[in-house]
Length: 247
Ligand code: FES
Image (cartoon, rainbow, N blue to C red; front, side, top):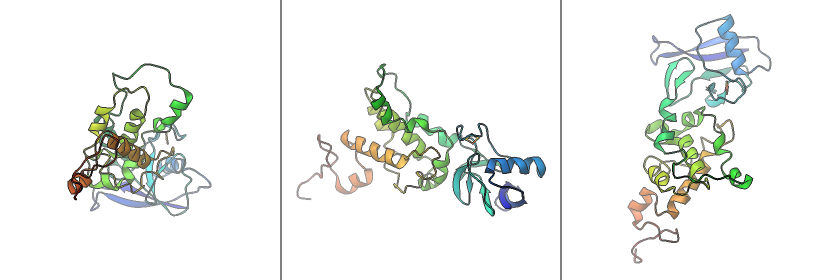
């Protein structure tokens, strides 16, 4: 079968060039195929991998324009393999995802020092169990059209991680976490859903962003674009206050 790989090529106009490889493959993962190409054809082919079992997130890349984990995706004839989008390509299929993952800190998406120390019940744990399962593959940032045009957007992963802590029953005061996601955060998301199908562990960042919007509304925040047009804010009961009743 034939597989095309977008390779580092400084002489090419955009610094990369598609290289076609003819390979013997039958029901093999992309990671196995890339390893075979590297071993048998071209030792300079660069890509990341570690666990080989869909756990570490290091082998994320795109096939035919869709984000996948190379260690779990089964190769098909004619596949085109490219690095993740919206990140600097270091070489071939290796990208620098540090900028995206740093938003975790910017969004205060971690346990607070004021958090209560106590056991959680199985029911309480289930509330944010999925959000805790992120493997940091950065596929959601690659798929996000908002992050593509605004590199300051906190993005799907950091906001999912924020909801993971905002919804944690041990967090006694989440006002700081909610305040820090108002700018370049929850209201900038277009709810386009692009981040949802590409998550290899089934997290739905869009849904978590909606939950954060609801929580923000209850705490007196509102969509700045809505606020600019209609004034108001939110009343004590969490419903929109439309300001002048004569409006
Ligand atoms: Fe770890 Fe693919 S190598 S997720």
